[in-house]
Amino acid sequence: MAGQTLSKYMMQLSEKENLLLERELRQRQKSTQGAVPARQAGPLEAREPPNSETAIFEKSSLAAVLGHMCDYEAVSIESTKALRALASLAFSQGAEVGNNDLVLGQLLRLLQLHPSEGVLQLAGMKTLCHLAFVPDVALGKLAKTEMLTALLATRNRTVGDCSDARFHAEASERASEALARIVASEAEAVVAKGGAEGGPGLTSLFEVVSLAVAQEVARGTWTPGPGGVQELIARLLEGELVQPAFVVESLVSAAPILMAAGVDSDLATGWIAVLRHLGSGLGPAFNEVLVAGGAVAATLTLMELHSQNLVLQSQGMACLFLLLDTCRKSAPKVFAEASGTKRTMAAMIVAPEDVALQSYGIRLLVSVLDWPISVQRQAQLNFEASVTLTKKAMQRNLDSSSLQVVALTALAKYLEDLGCVTEVKEGGMEGLIKAVMTRPDTFGYLRVSLLCHFF
Image 1: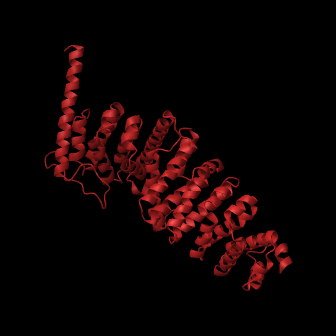
Image 2: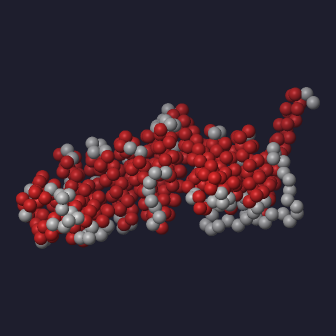
Image 3: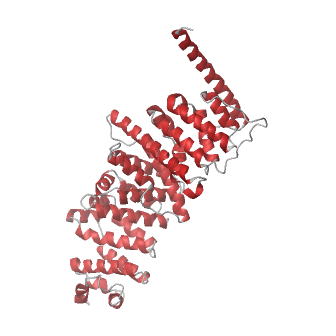
């Protein structure tokens, strides 16, 4: 058969195969309530495999591979074989594989059905990693909530959840690589258009991470530290694959979506926790971009909207203090313009026994004294009220030596700068302050000579 004739024949054969594949899979969807998984409310149930002898499939045929993925989804060994073949096809035929919604849907389904199978997860992550290097597929198919959720689940899965630690570790690394490639592709597309705005894919990623963190916060298992999304973003920034402004635009864009959707306050808590996580590990320069990009205003708005969620208020206060402490020139003005002192005092009133919140609030309010006069006026801080809140925090949290140190240090600053001796003494505070100053766990950390001058 001549070259042109052979080429034409192969193209026609491929078209026919794709048509047959689509028709067959549509029929499978109807008979099984859909092969492409939506976000499930409960655990998935695998379809029973055929009763006949296990079939041998053609590994170079996408139709055959997908058929095996569907027929033997309950059998992890057979599913792994199919995913390995799919990974090879994704490497050589990335566009064809990546633009097939039925293939991607069944891939997600297998990942969800077999979360503890390390070898299967690795095969799935190799497939997605290959596809992530096809820009159109990365942007059009992989930068979606379901895909990002699957990638993050594999990336963050602990070794104890997996049948083989070695395969789990490699699967996690492949998931990280795929996520990085998706975000980088989006950033490249934005730059190519001459813009600097964030991308919907990274925004979706932050939404997915916020949801996961919200669930951990609700369970009391959230332990921010190195790793997670902070590590992913750090790698992208270090490799100059994305710019800080792109990351911040995407992150802040996730907050209005949460607010506009009217979702529960736990999800908003997750978003603030993610913001704090990034702000604590990516350095002062990145935090400056956070401040300029609207992170302070977004945090204050969420605190205002969910004023009765004490966990959110505590996370928000810690985040605000972090940004103000690391961006001492730029953050105060932004904070003042957004009525930050008013929100800080409201949070301290609603959570009087939250030691961390009270400590951050006390330090934040007293720091206003060091701001430029014009910014102090804009902040409209009632110093008498802030002194009162500091005293109340001391009275309500006598067992916390760390808070007592913070509060006494703040009172010393008020006395030094404002000379408000009467306001500090009111309410029987003179005796309490003297008693606290003599405690071995606080003495030595304070400007005792200043306080003794007034008492």
